[in-house]
Length: 202
Image 1 (cartoon, rainbow, N blue to C red):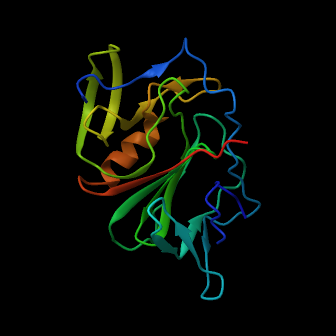
Image 2: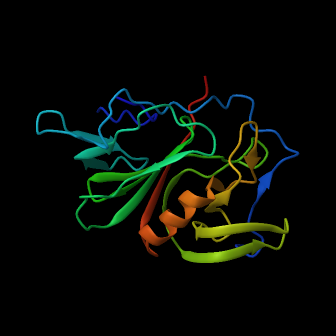
């Protein structure tokens, strides 16, 4: 079973951008997303079901996970919502594992390797509703494209499409592959919740 660091078995006008000149925090490790299963989805039976513990102590029960056949690398993602019933979407971001997972109800439908804020521009953690969606936003502060923006805070922290690569970081936003960002943008709505799990320093 793959691990994604979640113990799964258990001023937007300013915005932010990816910083090529500023290296990622030195403790960023390669994301740990892997699976030795060939199936598209791992269905958890009654005795195997787990709950995800979120930053506010809330527990979210999970009925199925994506089966990722090999470790995801920077810029890669998985998406499969075939057979998943309709329901509210929610997002869980694990900074330690450098992954974002999107769920519809109790089912994971997408996961991707992310970029996040360097030590000088920390990504906030906790529970955030999606405040607004902008398909073609551009940061006025950094003069950088932020496609498929999902605004999380009043001061510009957002999830948006980025060039996700090793040794890169953001100014506090969550950067995801643009193709994944497009799918995520259509899968979520204003008010849907995003949970950002703090990085565990070793």
